[in-house]
Amino acid sequence: MEIVIANTTHLKYAEIICETIKESAKVRGTGIAERTPEYISKKITYGDAIIAVQSNEFAGFCYIEIWDNKEFVVNSGLIVHPNFRNQGLARKIKEKILEHSKNKYPEAKIFGITTGLAVMKINYELGYQPVTFSELTSDEAFWNGCKTCKNYDVLIRTDKKMCLCTGMLYDPKHEKNIKQHGYNLKVLSRLKKIKQSLFLKKNNNE
Image (cartoon, rainbow, N blue to C red; front, side, top):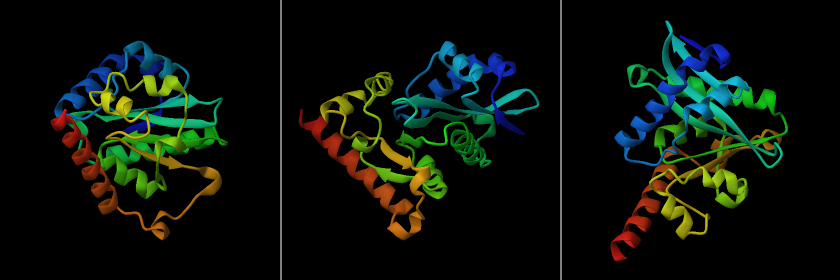
């Protein structure tokens, strides 16, 4: 298994990357912002992505987005092809994209938003802190990227202050041992359930 910084030799995988992201959103029933092959190709060409390939077969992917004049970097679009799931590949890709982000954008704060507990757990173990959306980028273009997510109406109703996603931030200038701050997967799981209960209740009353 090769897990490397993507380059132009990987452009041929752009279509299957987009298809895998789209199908994963359907299966999970949760929000994943869709991307076009052109967008993915641009990330690959600029070296702002990590790809996993085994014997020329696409296995996994994650890309970097830059916001607020490189003040913030987002590791987005983490996806593992169904043929390669349950092998710990997602964590390896996350480790590689975090390392690449820190090397390429050393002054940037790195964050992600997700509804998936598995990704929350990986982020937690890599040193990310759960944060409010107000601590993330205020760039409208970033939040506009959520328009293809099925939960976008929740984000709009709360004036972009919260959603079913949880924001997690890694600040290389203020690295913390997360275990000293009382966060664990049970806390994140409870947070997710509270959010779901809150918004489902609101929808049922409307």
